[in-house]
Image (cartoon, rainbow, N blue to C red):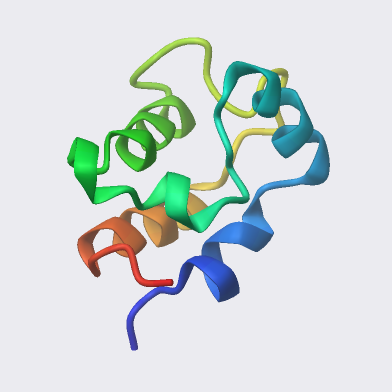
Length: 84
């Protein structure tokens, strides 16, 4: 079964994470923003890079950082085609 943004990914983002990123125009709770194909899914891929620590500062700022299982789930959402 494909990973779903609404069921699997959106719940991983805490309200504090969403509120912290919104002023930077990063809409973690907005499926259209996170899955936007018009920019080759740049938003979703950027978030993944920050979650993994490939880009700094690592998200969520100040931690706790996502577990390998949570990052794997997000990665599967990407590879499953950004399902709603």
